[in-house]
Amino acid sequence: MRSLTIILLLISGTALCQTRDAYESMRNRMVDEQIAGRGISDQATLQAMRKVPRHLFVPASYLSEAYSDRPLPIGYSQTISQPCVVAYMTELSKPAKGKTALEIGTGSGYQAAVLAEIVDTVYTIEIVPELAKEAAARLKKLGYGNIVAKYGDGYLGWPDHGPFDIILVTAAADHIPQPLKDQLAEGGRLVMPVGNPATVQELILLTKRKGKITEQRLEQVFFVPLKRLKQ
Ligand code: SAH
Image 1 (cartoon, rainbow, N blue to C red):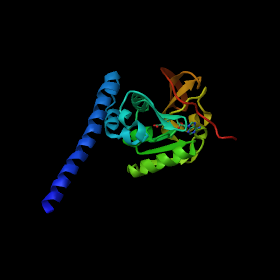
Image 2: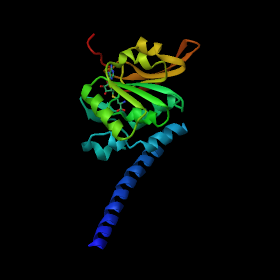
Image 3: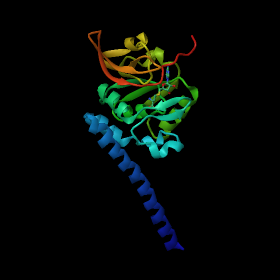
C-alpha cells in the first residue's frame, strides 16, 4: 500500500511538472518568437514576460491560446492585450527597481503583473466592477503584494499616490487625460493609445523633463475604448 502511494505520488508529481514545463516552454517560445524576435531587447521586460504565467490570466476556455500572438476576450467586451503589445509598452515605460507605476485599465491584471515584476509598486484602476474584483483576487492569489488595485474611472488618475514615474493607459481615447499628465513625475514616462477609439490608434509616449512634456508618436495599435463613469 505504502509503495503504491509513493508510486502514485511520483506519477502525479511528474504529471504536474510536465504541465508546468509545458506552459514554461510555451512562454519561452512566445518571448523568443513574438517578443525578442520583434526587437524588444530590454532585459527586465523580457525576464518579466518569461516569468508571468499568462495562462492564469485568460478564461479557461482560451487556455490553449494563452501564449498565442493575439489579444483574447476576458469578458464584458474587454480583452487581454497581445503579448508583444504588453512587452512593447512595458519597454517604452523604462521600468526599473525603485519606480512607481500607474496603470489605467487593469482588465485581467496581466500588464500590471508584468510591471510589478520590475518596479516597486503598481497602482491599477479598472472601470468594470466585475473585472476589477476578479483581477484583484487573481493578483492576490498569485502573490503580487506590490500591486494596489481598485475599481474606478482611471481618467482621473490616482492623485493620492502620485506622482508616478510610469503611467500606462491600456484603453484608447482621442486625447490624453490632463489629470494623468499632471500626475506624471519629473523624468516620468506615459504611454497611451491615442486616436479614434473605434478604429485604429497611435501609441503615444510622453516624457516630462523640467516640467515640460514632450510627445513622440509610435506604432499603430488597436485598443478597446477608454470609458467614463457618469459625472
Ligand atoms: N491591461 C489589461 C487589458 C486592458 S483592456 C490586461 O493586461 O489584461 C482595457 C481595460 O480598460 C478594460 O478592462 C476596460 O474595462 C478598462 N477601462 C476602460 N476605460 C477605463 C477607465 N476610464 N478607467 C479604468 N479602466 C478603464
